[in-house]
Image (cartoon, rainbow, N blue to C red; front, side):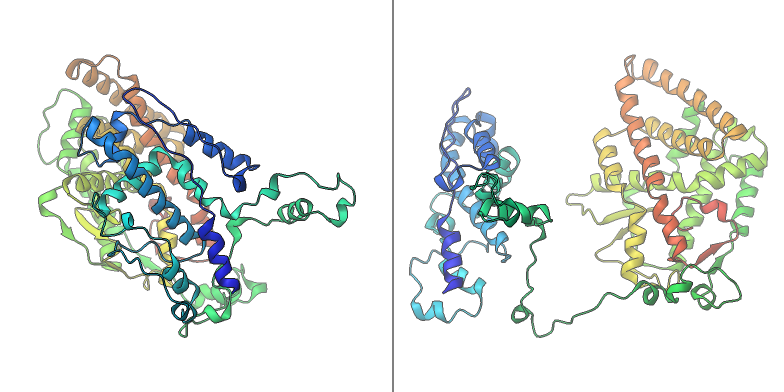
Length: 534
């Protein structure tokens, strides 16, 4: 009986925020909050937002799915808002009860469940499914709308009037939170009155966000396995008092599991040969920036020859390192000022910037791939003209770490935390090839200068000054855009976001080295600083 009473309380306390009236200009409608919502300033504020809202002709068109114009869309808006609000209310009720989402529309069933059916319900959710107040307009018997029309309307309401959903989420908030002590502060330490008792609970940390579900043992499925989180010493594989011991005489976790050494001497030797040979073809261009852009065009994303990367293991890891390192060497050789430098300075700059170049190149090529697709997935990313889907592809981490794959994958993803923001900014900016070339060069030279300071920084600052002057000519003469400050500012925002992603993930890499998350060693470790693999 207590379960049924709980369901009935939720079904009967439904808030109606009022109707929204529409006109060709601006109109508004007012409504008063129900008695059970009065006294709650949060709900009052949300209801005020709803009552002061108005929909113009364009809003009505979007509400109707952008398939009808002005008057026709306005005719349907009232019914769409009414049905959508009912669906939002039921969805939030199910969410608060930790039930499954609303099922797809079904034929309308107007028969009431019998007492025997209610008594035979195997669970609280099954009981709720029997008594859920689904009306005919929320079923396949709706004579005016398809279910997809309501889905579109709900998406519009969530964006245009988020207060509607917020009001329906009020059930976990008590009106007693906003009332004063009923005893005037007398015997406050004993918390005799209800507001004082609730206030004390809130002061010690009681929050609706901390609600825990499925705590009752009878709710656990038969195949549920209770696991205990291992201690740090058990997880790492060292005794607790020797957790951070670096004594080589003691056989610790690192000595039992030695690092895999990756020798990149041959890769550096190949890069040295390319530096000695110079550019393969003579470059004819007016500015240094255009010469670099010529090199960038040779490395552009080829959407017609994209291969799918199904398995990512040690061979693929080494192949990607080799690909980007050599590509950066060839790209740099298109810059006259770079070719004038001493060979050791050239190699130092390349070893420092290749992984920064590869980071933004992955983001740019992924954006270009998504633009060429009809329904791109956020889990897809392009690496050296190969498509990798985290949902379909498999990642082998056994060779690089002795930790479980789940933890290693999460650690690796933490190095690319800002990639989604970077790709979103690039997609919104839609830079030209010249602008992309400048972004690549500015980002690499700025990173190298800040990392080494001194003479290296003077060199990289000189490089940036030359490229900045070339970009100025590009905007003023070719684009005929003398007022390009705002555009340049947007370009720098993307580059600053990339640098921020490198700086802010350094603590994660330091913790990874402390706990030996990756057992990879390199013959030239300075080449992989800030790359996420060292």
